[in-house]
Image 1 (tube, rainbow, N blue to C red):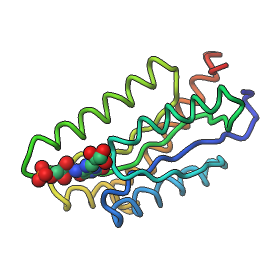
Image 2 (image 1 turned 90 degrees about the vertical axis):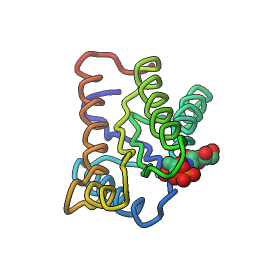
Image 3 (image 1 turned 120 degrees about the horizontal axis):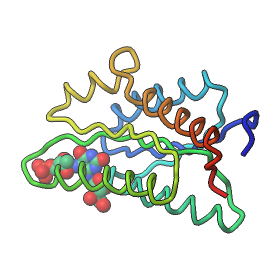
Image 4 (image 1 turned 180 degrees about the horizontal axis):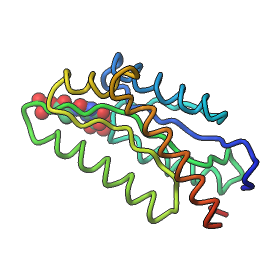
Length: 154
Ligand SMILES: Nc1c(NC[C@H](O)[C@H](O)[C@H](O)CO)[nH]c(=O)[nH]c1=O
Ligand SMILES: CC(=O)[C@@H](O)COP(=O)(O)O
């Protein structure tokens, strides 16, 4: 991957909450458009499915499939009545971190984990927290650092 090559990223969005997913995706797309990066979008049911899609993309790359310079994970996990919040929030984050470190993959994590919907909106809206845009910019930053260090995935 050369410094001047146009970057291509894969956005994986968990659409457990449709309207919130729209807000996160708007921010992420705006950030990547502003950076002049190309991207594809894949939609999954929930945050727990996001890490596997990155694994699928890495596997496909080894079979001469599409190659992505980085990944943007988007989703919203809102606490309910049971322990499932901890499972979804913690395990999706853990799997993304494990992928980034063990596979040297550039990932921006825009999966919100909130106590309620109000907190989620305050972070999803591009005009407020813009966590979707932040995650996209984080992925781009990691791609640049990986290039600078000469650590691109072969
Ligand atoms: N409760 C939330 C979920 N739960 C669904 C899981 O992510 C997963 O899709 C399901 O367990 C089937 O494997 N997902 C979110 O993204 N946000 C939530 O608040
Ligand atoms: C984060 C979740 O999994 C949550 O939406 C599930 O709600 P509940 O714990 O009330 O089943």
